Image 1 (cartoon, rainbow, N blue to C red):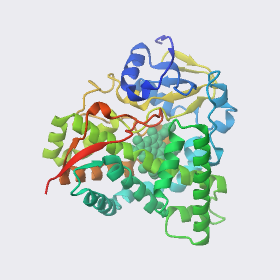
Image 2 (image 1 turned 180 degrees about the vertical axis):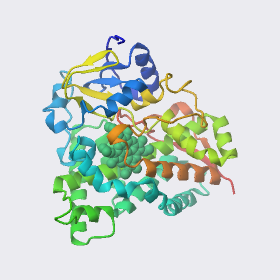
Image 3 (image 1 turned 60 degrees about the vertical axis):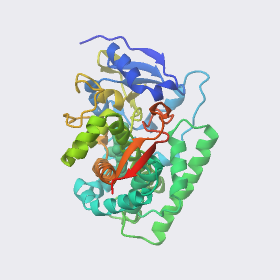
Amino acid sequence: MQTTEARFEKLGPEYQQEPHAVHERLRAVGPVSELVLPRGLKVWVVTRYEEARIALSDNRFSKDFSKAGDLFGRHLQPGAPRREFDQSFASHMLNSDPPAHNRLRKLVNKAFTARRMEALRPRIQEITDQLLDEMVGKSEVDLLDALAFPLPITVICELLDVPMDQRDDFRVWSGTLLTDSKQEDVDAAAASMYAFLAALIESKRATPGDDIFSALVHASEDDDRLDQTELISMAFLLLVAGHETTVNLIGNGVLALLRNPDQLAALRADRSLLPGAVEEFLRLDGPINLATFRYTSEDVELGGVTIPAGEIALVSLLGANRDPEKFPEPDRMDITRQTGGHVAFGHGIHFCLGAPLARLEGAIAVGSLLDRFDIELAGEPETLRWRESTLLHGLERFPVSLSDRG
Ligand code: HEM
């Protein structure tokens, strides 16, 4: 067994701007590091691929925080502002261990299979085309506002039959909940989000539709029935996971192409490379970083380090996906490389439910964008900033200049 000393250091806000350099440094020391996140939470972070797969799938890394007591309170550094998380949204599959996890996931699994998603292709294409039509004649747009955000939120809202009129509010609330915002803003966003989801469930109760939510709300007595907190939590998870991530797949993917003109040219020349390119976007600069919260239900030996029971463990998905032991020359973008086994969608029983949908949306969005426009970065690349979040890895803004390909 390799013995590696765990590292202990505090990550500053600059980490969010340059995460890859930090992971490379940590990985060189060992697979597991003891870190304090920018907002003062002490965690164990896994940055090497092999150990990452173990931490994501070994059941000694639990997701059932209800059994962990005041887990987050215990691991805050003295003086760090305590950020309360609203528990009203927390009773969902991503916070559950088996058997509760199986029960919750089973209720929606069938609705999100690759086959079911493939049937949505024409509609996803139609929404994409409408968004691209609105870009025609403009010399500059913010690609996040024009395409990367509205596409996935429209698709998931249609799939769940959620009214679109509060789409922009919803974007603000979920952005506040997922980034390093002030506590009062978090509380206000959580209250608005709760009211929105409760009203949604009420409307499904009164007027059921032919959608997944209505089916969940109206599950008969014989079927599995979700209580109100579980319904709210399921709605929250699907809606938030359904758009906060895919926006970054599209944004980060297009950015990587613009920074690697040879790869962009290769993709333009051979459209059959598109599915592989989407996987490389996910590997190279995936939408999610330190969001895979787990806690150790007992002492766990990982990569030569003993993580004591009751500690918070996180896999850096970005770090694992750039481990040179798994992906040679990991910082180089290569849309033809073998990306099999990347962990951008996680691994094990919590592997992303929405992966088939996200892949489809990513391929349609990027493929159609390239068909219709020549695009370039508007402004200097240095002016691009990543959002201040350790959970998500996505741009704050993404201005591009456009010319119609005719
Ligand atoms: C779980 C990534 C899109 C729904 C996960 C996990 C990751 C992930 C890493 C596992 C987290 C963990 O193990 O702690 C992504 C990425 C996406 C994406 C990178 C886009 C590119 C979506 C979409 C949906 C979705 C479109 C909408 C249905 C879920 C759900 C889970 C999940 C419900 C929990 C699964 C479980 O606990 O069994 N996702 N996701 N995701 N994702 Fe996604």
